[in-house]
Length: 308
Ligand code: CP
Ligand code: NVA
Image (cartoon, rainbow, N blue to C red):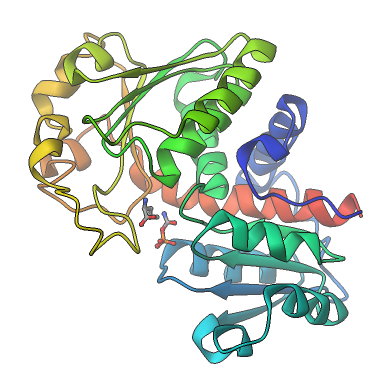
């Protein structure tokens, strides 16, 4: 059975650390290993738009000696009437790994269920686990550790980033606080999965509705778009209730700490969920975070193909 990376708890705490360590090796050029030489091919398929994920996977696969096959899903038969499972069976005959950005998590679960090769989640409505590996590498670079740190996420607590930070952060032993407007809290089953991990690692998770209370003492403050891809016409007010959760200088100061790190997976909607002052300020690590997508995904792919 191949290993897949569909959600953050598909890696144990030890495996997550192994991948972060390997990502550091790649970043600091202590290794130039090419586990995809041969070359092994990786299909990278998009059902939603992307800048970072697409570019970092494509360049990373080439740097690992592999052959990226980047496809817009609208040009595939998958978009017409071929089933996800039949697509998985066919891809398994051509390539060595599938990386997929899609909508419902059930779709990537279906892909992995019929796949003979590793399947990697490049973002679903529910999770963005590749992004959180990069976030963890970035936090560890700035703070030297992960376990015991407090990360507060402000905004849509029910989106992929909030969910992945909850489970991925708990896997790393962090204390994750989600501050979200009423009606935008994380899904209960995600909170349960995060709690299960936190019990193992000594981390914790909490949901709060007051942004100032949520950021007090935070080592890391993260935010994300109030409207995720696919939610543009969901009929919800995604502005009014979110205004108090905008990450501005006053909220950053309310951490009471001088070394807080600011994360945003990007793309940012400047002036909405985060102000220019914070995004471009000294606490911001967002461009390191974007860079680290490359190193963590190289580490993840190396790890997955070497485990087969
Ligand atoms: N952060 C992130 O996944 O960016 P893209 O949507 O540009 O890939
Ligand atoms: N929550 C955002 C993340 C973008 C990388 C979205 O799904 O659109």
